[in-house]
Length: 274
Image 1 (cartoon, rainbow, N blue to C red):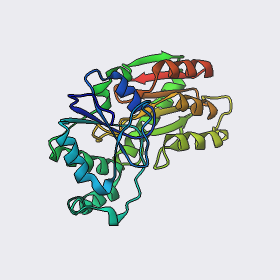
Image 2 (cartoon, one colour; image 1 turned 90 degrees about the vertical axis):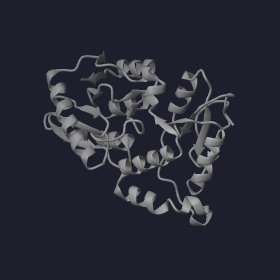
Image 3 (cartoon, one colour; image 1 turned 45 degrees about the horizontal axis):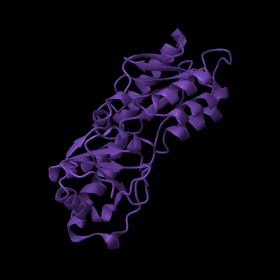
């Protein structure tokens, strides 16, 4: 189990590089836990694995280990539930969790946070552990044009509308038209869709388009804060876009140097938009 003696923080890890980045930034030790089926990419770590069907024993174990704070990091999909594996106490949470899951991702995440807090576990955001991952307002590379700025503004309005419906955190807009919006399949699927349909832009020689990302308007930012990594840049370039913009203070860059280098190589701008 990845833990330093005296650790008070647990990383509840999903897939991707974020759990490893947080682990590197922690000096006082941590306990690493992962949901079974979603391995954490933390080199050399042996995580504590748990299942949703045994959530209450897992929470009890965290408290017994002296954990007082938890941070959620990394991607997970909705796990497959096996009813026969529920312990009696966790089974009592099922109606509450299922109701929240049917209401949407944001409602489900709020329900998870509330349950952890009932065990006196403080939920903190990944940006609170590694604030350097969140860029301040400004252009990191490239130079967005007036047309790009207009497309980014339109995309921001669309993402705000999607967020109210608890649908997604991103949209692609070119020449004022929405080419793609993020839904359950996620950002990569949205950008792949935009790449397939980039020929729909009214003016082939006009603005190439912008991918914009932001948290949902009412989401709890301690969990599921949007992220952008080098792969995002690669897919945005494949979609023929001019750049990537996001809400300043609301998005984490995974490996900023690599993201900027990839954007510069592809001729894309990166804009942390206030």
